[in-house]
Image (tube, rainbow over all chains, first blue to last red; front, side, top):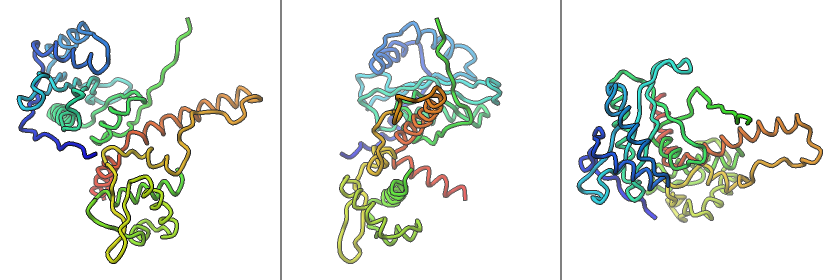
Length: 161
Length: 136
């Protein structure tokens, strides 16, 4: 089966999130993850869309031409963090999703590129994220965008009762 | 990774870079410095998996027929090696704690390798190949 062609970038708008988008972001997240967490998204909006916005970026994708029933087609959230784990400042992506019925159309790529542009404009040269090993969808996407294993390894330990 | 898996990935990357082009086994073999005999067996397996098509006659060869955005390195490796089994110790009945500890470390590495191969598609390999070529 042939994959659909990407949507021209002129038909997708990537912009900073607004408060009116929040319910749609939370609904998209719930459709994808199965967990409703509006409180979490309100907190993320408060912290990443209203404070230190020169270093924090909460972007959404919208389009009048593609799936108009979904006012928000995707989102990406990231911030510049410095000196954690001895690392020089770098851009971290910690939330990312695209409406399931509109994947493979280039929306995720446009969100990713917009975030890259925000980081680059702030003088950042490295962008990082963390992906669950079983999450092949996100792993494959970030790989296709040129991300590779970085110099850090995430470690964890189960704590005894 | 076994040699057959490596050759299959090289051949598919070569063919997928221009799906309309037909490339002979000899041509691929020369580029990657491998015997045409070994490569022919690999191509036969790829053909059975529906990833390539053989065109006979003058100007014939192989062309790519798979889905480059959907076929991962793990899919290709699985055609030549057993990647399905979960991490299992061959004979666990008499295993010592030290053997179990080393086994756990090996499983960690295997899990990461499997997740990585499963996330890289032929399409991603083409982009990575291009970036590597531009770095020269």
